[in-house]
Image (cartoon, rainbow, N blue to C red; front, side):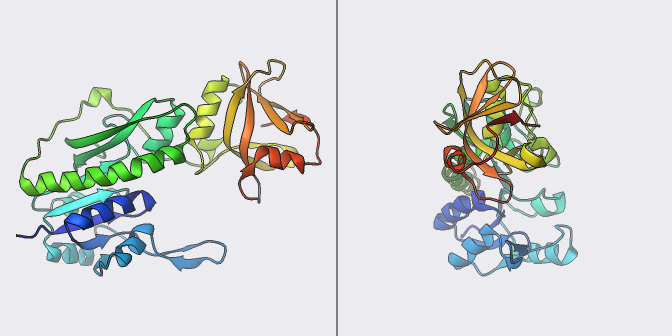
Length: 311
């Protein structure tokens, strides 16, 4: 008897899982967010998951504004899902995830119970973790707390950004999503309860969260910058109060710089910034209103002062 899988997701991170599951268990329907205006022209565009679903030939696509909308609940129930697979989507109410006959699961971008929340990849880098991964778990009423079904691990190299870790986790997330569907379909799942005493939080990131505090040690500041890179981007204020996003940096020896003080070497195009116990050299930046660029390329065309302070 065919297994009826409904997939729920929104961003690029979920696409690999959708494709992997669909290659073995044809996905009968996709649930994603409504199309939204994006870009300078504010043209209405579908989510990455909707685009991928259409490319795979999946024609049943539900885009509810509210997951408690009676019309959506009726449509979902009519699909009679055996499995609901969730990757990078919204919090499902009980009346949604309990519709799955064999179970509803989520693939989360951390090694649960660590980094429960909306931004596990970012906070793993910010906190200097050397290992990360993905975990599949059964959905429960409390977010990211359900019994674990499987996991995959990766090593985080020194200097890795959140964007790079995101790209590492996408394919293994897809592999785990398929494996979890196979376990649910065959009845071989062995749920393992999470140890709540080991839980850490990975809350949603806002603009103020991304403001760089230069009064911390260089290693902590570097990890913070890399943890916000490339999105949403760690920022600081400099010339004329303009915002400068810093995407990548490296630790250098420059004990003469005070915390937040920057020095631009016009001959070597190096741009160093002081921290509490050392300095960082900026390597990738995004000045306000401009694209992301190599910091040395920016300095070569820079005509302002060679020193100052960030705020």
